Length: 569
Image (tube, rainbow, N blue to C red):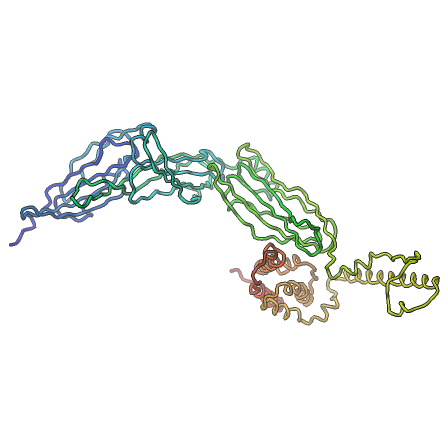
């Protein structure tokens, strides 16, 4: 027996909603049923877009047989959220030339109290501020309340034109009771930083998911549960973003170092190495500076610049960044260690550290400062040159007869048996000769320092490129201290060949080479030797980057100037 296609021809299309009236921002389920097996794309939902937000759509087909009579149906379940309140019409929908009946839907606008009391699912949104300056950070807190069991769901992330949006932390879950009804709450927090001024609308958050519904069908053995799709729309919010004040712009034009930092509070704090010991020459001194700002993200925190005094080298460690949300306010911190190494004993004055920021509470320009600091460094008794200093400062000791005893200059002087008067005269003679010799040595050193830059030193004259070979070997072997010691001799030899002035400091070496790779590699080397990791124990230093930078510079130095040609990349 054969059945014609007309036996199963589509003859009827029906449309129903699961609730009427409905609360504003609450979803309804529109069910459309066709009495035949129909392709899912036969239903056109575009007529619904005028008055409704169309959410998730699911399609199912069913075939049943009763008394040898077969029937087939195709069902569409469409989530709808009304765009406004009042009486709205769900238009007639067409499937293969058959139309459903239109439905009049009443959308009610209730107070927040009544809305929360009657809805099983709703969303609340809260901004920390509704009016901010450009680049001033604010927080948005979204809370999804639900009193039914969720099978699955998704909450859209906030969107704001011309702003960066970043989620802070993990979702927080809690329970609350509102008007006698228990709700489970999922809370999300976002940091929003607007990048341009104007008035903006923050898009309403939307939740889409499925809730568990008890089934009316029961058996003696099993009780089934069904799911129902739901969508909930939150409230749209307005945000006013103000431009940078003219007062700040005018002042920043006179001070190029000023940068726009809008914050509720910004402070600087410092801590010094507290080991109960004196600061010694050649030993690193740790200074920890902490910058704390409310209403700024970690990426907005400024650079902490610490200038070195003459005779004092500063090696900055890598900064540590932290953020914490406290009472709907984001507080960020930058903690940075600086290692200070003195080349000689004395008192060193560290300049003031100042960061200019704009107080968004008082609308005034303010300054966070660390005042000028003075530290005293003493001679290191364990240093190799300390013996010479002790000799220069030691006064002749007195014997039991109150006679001066000269320094022991030779073994024969201890064996001489001379009258006391002659011994005293010889002692002063030897001491005078020693002072003259010391003065001559000092004058000789001074003359060497006053030589013209193109006058080679004796050490450089006999270098013959050996420092370059030793430097490459030290980099390959990861010998950090030896590498640092060979940098200046190698560069001076290279500059001597090109007729350039000699250098005496690592900072001058970085300026002369003027390559980012060289400066970065040299900074990492100094941090390895004198930074925080040098105290706590760091892994072996790798000199590959510095080795490559040195070889590139050496290759450029050997290339004749007349044939060099630089092209734009």
